[in-house]
Length: 110
Image (cartoon, rainbow, N blue to C red; front, top):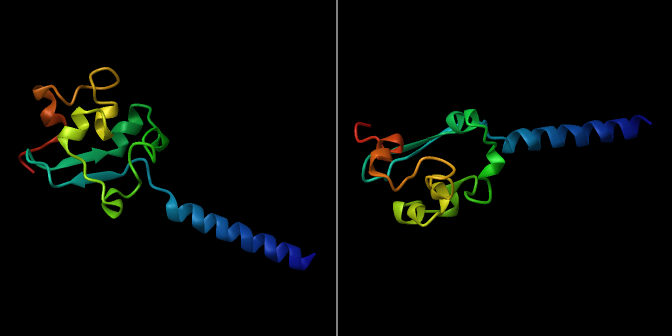
């Protein structure tokens, strides 16, 4: 019985550590510095406040670590409905194609 309890405790500890190692806070900010109109900062908190869960985009639209997977996000792909453009199309969320919305993501002052 002691052996079973020890093994159970070990398994639970491993699962806990593994779960926290891969957990990403919904309030996470991620800045893409390659934007020609200035850096783009993705705000997890803003998207969570809109009612979205991480699973709405991960991993279907975005891998969890874009830089590590070589994913390159650009406006051509967004306009085609990929990545941010899957929602920022004017139907689900503001349109990325509308020039007046550029400053909602890009900041030339940063």
